[in-house]
Length: 585
Image (cartoon, rainbow, N blue to C red; front, side, top):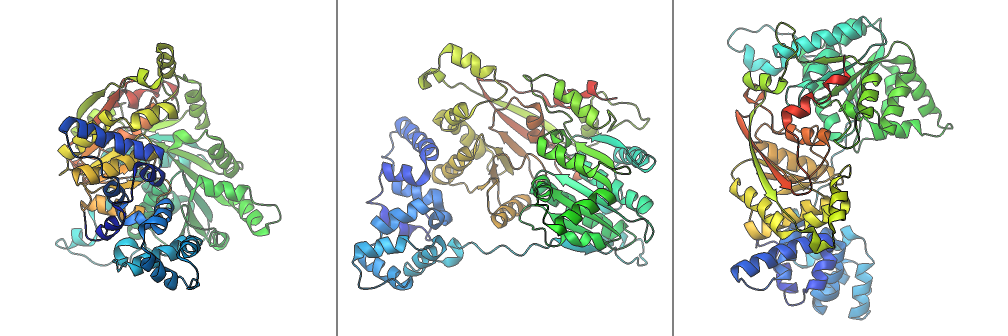
């Protein structure tokens, strides 16, 4: 236990019990942690569970962000003298009884309570405090670098290799796509490239060529819209465009961030630009579409986008048929002269159960025109993954399956219930909850993380609670530091965790529903899939995180470890890539 949380532990160690432990952490998380420790205790004959120790080591630096813990701590953890100090810090009437002082303290805001507790206990504020997020720049003028004479010796130092060229297979894709969208003002196409093969870079290179050909300065104005469903995807595309345009652009262009925590304050300025590129999340665009007709600025912006958008890119295009996404795409492509390009590593939406109707509809939405990786003679590759592994763009995968059998009869499942669960489109929250707190299953996952603790390991957990359970148990039972990334994770904390993981400072990153797309970490060499699913799309996206090979700054060989639950199995990566081929021309 570190010095920052030990003083807190000393105050609660005689007061913490199972009921409070459960109240602070929640039912699922507390059950998952408790069952694991009880299983270990029964196997090793160890000491009784120390709930106070589990609480402080589980919550760690976030302990004063937990409202349930603070309520318990103020009511039962602090002495009357400490309450007097806290009341003084919070400007509470000193004549009140200690009971009323405790009640008055709990009426204060969480940030004030946190600051007060840190102060009266003489704790390190840097350890517990979260810094305010920096202001987001939502509009940026990207000015190409001025050409300078260079000699052979310093040429590579001045201009990084990745900004100068694309792989030959990427150039073949780019050339086909640019020809299709330049000579056809209403072109539709879908670019199909496996994760790790550089579909973002290839498409940004295409956009740069498109701007130079169709949005020439000062005569041919226009807007390019880049849609994506997550902040990570938008950020990745924005950063790639900024880097490449700086080296390859031929005039200053304005780029807009309208995703994540960004607001709409600057997007209106695009109406004054000659040309601009807008990276926008679907939820943000949906807010624009739903804006009141009384909002004249937004009404003018919508009309401007309809009339001036020349090219629309949708990343993870297999999601294009979802209501919010399709509505946005139909809106901006409703007039002549707007091209639509989808990007995906998995051009389909179905799993094993739902059939192929949605895949046919998706193919038709993109004009049944698909552009894919080919051989040098432009012939179709029977196995794109194998080809990309041969040229070391993708890593070789060392697969390991860890079978887990859970006795669902202990959870009142009949054989009929079991068959019904196995035949559903995907696993229900009820089954997810059962497997997420199963101590044997969690022990297998945690032992495997511990076995690979010197590797850079990314874990896909089966729920938000499961992320927290694994994170807490790694700390308390294995003394392994890890971070959790969820959809609601503070943007600054998320950015720092991802940065630490990419640099190798953090070895274990656990997530649920966030990092399956738009996440590249070259040092990643071990992927643990602890999330069961019947979705070929989702599973192939997850597997894609560990496919980066030496030619793209990754590894020659990576580990893929899949937890094989007894409810269902998983498809092979090669099969996932070719699954939708029959739906495309």
